[in-house]
Structures are given as structure tokens and as C-alpha cells.
Length: 106
Length: 170
Image 1 (tube, each protein chain N blue to C red):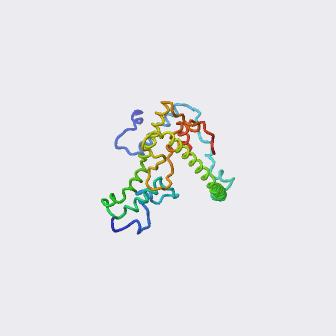
Image 2 (cartoon, rainbow over the protein chains, first blue to last red):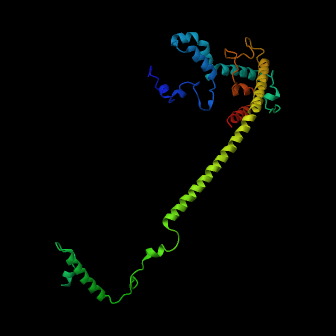
């Protein structure tokens, strides 16, 4: 119910732990995108959807990027394609540690 | 006459009549089948077995008390043993907690080294591509974001990546 916070009144936590990633978890395990989500929620809380979309676009983009990693994957893909192209042309040979023969570190 | 006596399914007769009819029938049969040896109870009847059983051994209540006492004693032993196990487990945890900074530092060094190598490789590979900023972060804030497995092992052979994937969960 909106104005009667029943769970806080009784001190129980029935479903608050699964509403957001940054909620309190058992053993205090943090989510992968905890920081980004925290930033976004702190920016966008209480100002309504339309205003939040305008003001918190940066945080939201970072949060979505952290979850989906589209930009990271695209970057890796570009680098990999370029690497394959250069290897086929013969202009580039990967160094030994990238071919599985690197010296083992602890 | 005999057929009348043999018929037991007479309607409306009381049982007394039927019993006398049965006894007469039995006598007739036993006299007819002369002296067959049968398994009969011993002469004088059976002995009273109940008193024979209880003459030796513990009574019922004392056996119950002995059983419950044994249970309780060994329960107490299990409780003590579990407490000792808990103390040893706390020792193990303490050892792990003490060594955790060392391992974490090692892992961090290793990750940073791999990222540095990847960065240099990226600089070499993307030399000719126009408009590429080497080592550009995809995130806007300049916070440390733990790298993905793909980022670390992207330029390495597939087995290393698979191995790292397995090791992450063991």
C-alpha cells in the first residue's frame, strides 16, 4: 500500500530484497553493477519518469552498459576483426603470451 | 433319518438344535473312522507361558530407562563433539581470512598485468584504423570497473578462456 509501509512497521523483509540489485543481500554479496545502479537510483529518485530520462541519461546509459555490455562487446569485436584481418594479410603475429605460450604467473 | 440329521440348513431352527445335530454328527463320524492318531494338546493342558517368560532378565520399565539413558548419554556426546567441530571450523575460517589479502593482491596484480598487455596489443593492432582511441573506456565515470573475462582473455586462445571460466567458479 502506498502510504502505509506495512513491512517497515512490522520490521519484516518479505520482498524488498529482490526489487533492486542494490538491496541488502545475504552475506553482503554485491551485485555486479551495484555502483552504477546506486548512482542511477540516487539521481533519478523522486523526480518522475520524464524528468529522470532527461537528467539521468548518463547514469542510465552506464547502468545498461554494465548489465548488457553491448559497447564492450562491440569494441572487442572490432579489435578482433581487425586482428584477424591483419593476421590473414600476414602483417601481424600475436606475441607468445597471446598464443598460449606465455610464462606462467602466479 | 440320517439324512434329516445331516441337513444343517433348516430354516427357522435355533442354534441349540444345530449343536446337538453337530455333536451327533461328530460322534457318528469319529466312530466311523476308527482311532486315527491326531495332534492333540498334551494331557493336563498347556502350561502357563506368561510366568515362564518373566522369570529372568530385566523388567520392562528398567529396560526402557536403560534405553533412554543410553540415548541421552550419546546425545550429549554428539553435542560436545559438534561444538569441537565448530571450534575447528572457526580456526579454518580464521586462516582463510588472514591469507585473503595476499591472494587478492596477487589476483589484482595479475589482472592489471593482463590488461596492460591487452592495451599494448590493441595499440599495435588498431594503428591503422582511423578515429580509434586506444584504451578508451566505455563508461562515463572514471571508476574502476572489474573487467569481464572476455576483456582479459579476448586476445588469447580459447582454452585459456574456458579454463578461466571454470576456475572462476571453483
